[in-house]
Each structure stands twice: as C-alpha cells, then as structure tokens.
Image 1 (cartoon, helix red, strand yellow):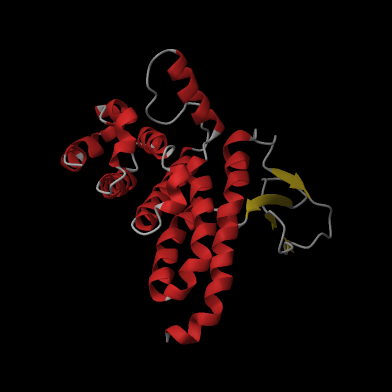
Image 2 (spheres, rainbow, N blue to C red):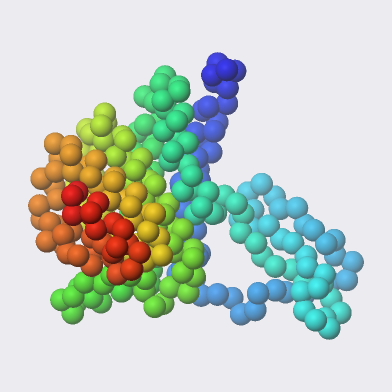
Amino acid sequence: HLNSCASKVQPFLDLILELFQTMDQTVKDTFDTPAAAGSSTAVAPGTPQYNSPRPASPVASTTSLAAEVGSDQPQTRQLQKGTQSFKLVAECPIIVVSIFQAHRSMVAKNVEAFVHRIKAILSLQAGPQKRAHEEAREKGTTFVGVAKDIKNRAAFGELVTAQVKTMSFLAYLLRVYQKLLADFLTELPEIVVRLLQDCPREKSSARKELLVAIRHIVNFNIRTIFLPKLDELLDERTLIGDGLTVYETLRPLAFTM
C-alpha cells in the first residue's frame, strides 16, 4: 500500500511547501490590505455565469445571478482559492509528520526546506496585531488579545491555529534536527510568547495544543533559551489568556508546564 503511493509523495510535499510559501502574501491580503469599496462588480450581458480560473490565478471568479435585489445585471464576487486558506494550512503539518513517519527515505531531502517554511510561518504577523504589540511596548505594558483593527476576527483565529499546528510540527522536528534549527532557537521564545498573547479567547483548543507543544520544547535540552522571556511567559494573562473557558480548563496544564 505504501509503495503504491511512493511516486506521489514528493509532488505532494512540494505542494505543501508551495502552500506555506504563499502564506506571507495571504496574510498581507487578508489583514493589511484595505477592503475594496463594494464586494461585487457588474458583468456585461452575455458574460458566462462561471469563469474557470487559470491554475496560477490568485482568485476564482463566480457570477451571482441575484447578487442585488432589483439589479438588471448579474454580479461577480471575488472568492479566494482554497490554497489561500489558513484552515487548509493548519491541516498540513500533521499530514507531513504522517508522511515522514511512513516514508522515512523522504525526510532527509525535505526536512531542510520545511524548516525554512516553518520559520517563515511562525514569524508571520497581521499588521494591525503587530502595531498593537508595538504600541503596548512603548507604553510599558503587554497587549493580550486581538487588536481592534483586525476586521476579520475569524480569519485571524484561523491564522493563529495554523501557527500553533506549525509549532507542534516544530516540536516534532526538534527531537532529531536541532542543528538545522539552531539559528532559529534564539527567536523561538519571543514567538511562543507572542502566540500565547495573540491566541483569541474563543480558541481554547488552539491554546491547549500550544501549551502541549511548549511543554515538549521545554523538556528538551534547549530550555535555557526561555530564561530571558520567563517573566513574560509566566504572566497569567499571557499564559492562560483572558477567556473564561481557558481560565477554568487550562490552568492545571499551564501551571504544570
């Protein structure tokens, strides 16, 4: 069974690497680009009701016949491709782990490329969220939660979830490939603290998975990298968040980490 899929493994891993590579632009498009005025544009009569996008096209174009009540012309809505979905990216790390475990011969030639993509994914920040952290630092305070300028809270939660899943992938790779991640380890504590601070209160499952990943990382022989950030990491608002669910259910896990 595994041998029958072997020829498809590398192309599939290449596709996942490509998905990771597009996330930087997707984050900018989702959170940093002002929404265009109006969500639809008129289509000339006779235009086909569905325009199949080119493979490299960033969006798919569909036509809604009843986009506006009383409109004589059909309207088009610009829809993101599935490859620009944070939800899709969130499912990729566990798939890659499964592939690496099933096809160990593929690990050596792919792990370095995935390490670079992991670094990039974990370093991504929504523009408004980054500004909120910078403004808080200037005031000598800590910002926890979702910035008020984040207009798409659901998408932001999906981005954080994707980064948390990637952190779990990182914890898996650290068991064997610490040398490849050596230059990234100094940045890791700051990223861990930021993800804890950014995790929306409604994403209790994501925070739980992040705490488990942090526990695994702390148990490695690199735990001393967290010393400069220890006070921030152990701040209750950062570690547990400000949601009632996480406060009541995740305190034991957080405090035994």
